[in-house]
Image (cartoon, rainbow, N blue to C red):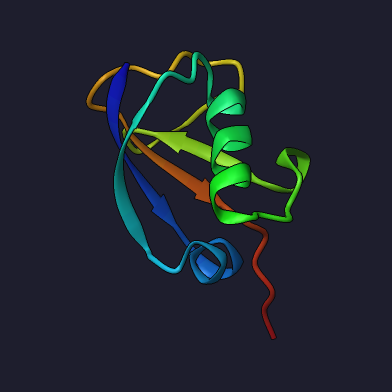
Length: 80
């Protein structure tokens, strides 16, 4: 089990009802973690619409989740 910090922006922040949370997870990979969080918060964005960063570095969805990681899910942004 890993204790991690997760940060959310834009649509994900609205769906989670928070911009940051600390959680305990048994997720093996970032994709597994996102699937777990989809069940918890009802996220509707698919992984192919998101970028993910771990400890301020963009990462691959197959990366392992390690205790103490800070993970940021980055949804697409709209601008004008």
